[in-house]
Image 1 (cartoon, one colour):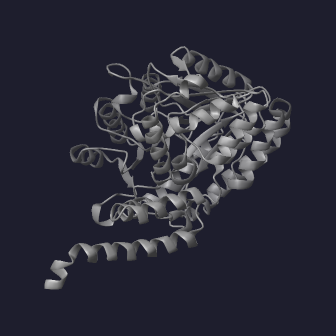
Image 2 (image 1 turned 180 degrees about the vertical axis):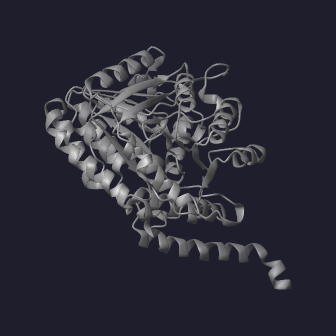
Image 3 (image 1 turned 45 degrees about the vertical axis):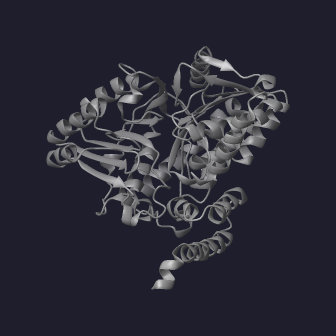
Length: 482
């Protein structure tokens, strides 16, 4: 015992490196992205104890262990019939080929990756900011007749959240089926509100609950989606979570976001996506009926695909769709993202397209809600500026919208940031829209946002202090870990 007391520090160091070396071997066998693997290895070897903690919390590869099963939902006959019906509708792709031109490559890409069908009969409404979204959402909920499904990364029982949850309680008492999935890391709901929801008959489950004693890897693989499905007829998806910071009525900091409301065929894949998550988080096996997939009577024709990605998909569907859309651009690419920490594929695509005399514009926040994300984002901007990409920093507040418009014919709105986490780790969902009208409206959103931006100039950007560049480089090195 005296030996142990006299050499406690040395013993701990030896134990640390024994565990660290074991983890390094595991990382090598996992065949991770080299940048990510090297980041973990450096952290494990250069940062005693801290490196192990970071790897313990963030380094587990749940995608490989296939714990995210969707087979129960996808194997149900009613779901197969719905998917088959949508499959027949993909013949309508011929009707939009002239519009899409090279963008039509996206349709078979997503179908081959994840059986994501093209839907034609949709009415799509673009929504700017949370205050507009919640006005529409509350009205739709009040008029709901059968069921309401919500899946959110963030739900808080602050002012706007309490208003929403109270409304859902009211609808549950009226006899509607109310199901809510919240991410356990992003959301914060009091025990009192949870009891009230339960007493009202609202079913709610947390996605991968995090407990200190059982949190291996659970800070990763979060449910970052924002989905609402009402009566199987109306769907919402986009960047706006349920929290007061997303509503600009009384906020100190302006919050700029984009969401969409969908009526039509595309609500069906959103509904299926919700049920796959519900099947994972709930204890009971739900039997899905036609009630959840009613016949729609939408006459509008906005071609749209619902693209989902996460540890339950074999491919990085949304990242690949973004990559193909960028590389097939002929006139312009406009991107808005709150976090720009991309992989090498997206960086190369943007650089090549910009150097090909195609207009590429990127909007990012000047002041992020995360200092490490802000510095990591800034570390990528010089290489874009050198390639001819126009980079703008949003100054009015915080821009949280996740959108892209290409050539006025393709656009995407969803939950996916341009970063490692969205591309490879979290559960995400985007609507891919093949429509000139929606693209033009989204382009107008982009143009309006530019009025509140500062354009970066290469020469002045290069004059940042060495200290700033060092912090950026460090943040960039840490980015794959976070």
